[in-house]
Length: 434
Ligand code: SF4
Ligand code: SF4
Image (cartoon, rainbow, N blue to C red):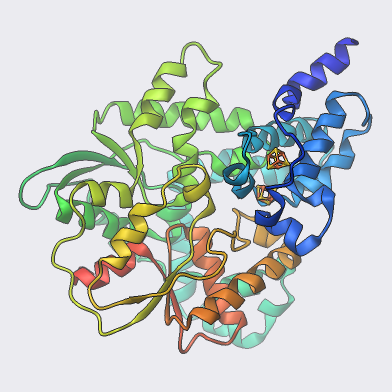
């Protein structure tokens, strides 16, 4: 065996592809196979492409770029697989190997470097982004821009996303975010809250409500200083070194809090935090600390249920509600029961499960921006099932899913009759907390 083939096998995790027995059980759950109809755009096809690299049958690895780029990384295939193929690890390693070889143009290189190294990891930059959004929305610039029609001319359909951006909080309100809140009544747990980068910039209200709900349920809550982005966007884009760097920074920050749990409210971030142990497993100095971090990592729904659920919810009057699951929460963290239990325990709602509830909505980080058309095909399927429930409220547990469902509602002209909300917003509304 030549050295280079050995190297390729190591880089592309060839060994792991050998657990695939080609049964095809993963095909029906794969959104890109359903909408694109090509074997190369299915889990089995993608695994085979990686396998062929490891066997020297594919010499030009750039042929893997499109099939792997178009994978949502939803990992529904992993949940469906009877032989336990570690598709997520194979995908991550292959993407990183492709990125190492890819010759990005100078502007793209600069953009990647800026976003991955300077913007997402910097709480100052993310706060500035949130404040800029607030200024844009409140100063009247948004109205002028929207009425000018310029938004329709922006690349990557950015105008569609601008219209569904959540209302940003003011800089003054942002400064009032509590850093420590005591449990209401008997204390059950001490928890360290993970704020996230995009959650902190654009969904700061949901973060604040999360802290208040945790306290209401019986937790002492610490919003840990010096935490940073979880690194999920980096890992999904093949920037593994930067993802590991951010993981280490978070491990240091959260170890100091010495809490019972590390709590997050975003399915995508939660999956990444849950996988720090796996991410740093080969790093002798960090493996144990990373594993300890992941063991403590919880979605907020798990902690609220562990506390006994939400007390004192006001009854709703027969509101029809459905739930769009976060893929990463379902397929990576394996958190399914708790958010549903919290939701269905809200008195007076009529909960209706949507068909194919496990299928991705097509958001997947920035997939809906960089692969807009493919993402909209997947979203259209999701909206077909959402509409069939007759629900007037769609609940999600991840910021990307939340924006995507808002986009779906907008595309279907349902904005007057259907709303999308994060589970935490819905529980806070039912608890009378604003
Ligand atoms: S991660 Fe999702 S989109 Fe990618 S192959 Fe698996 S099921 Fe298909
Ligand atoms: S990944 Fe799993 S489910 Fe899919 S073809 Fe291979 S063995 Fe079967």
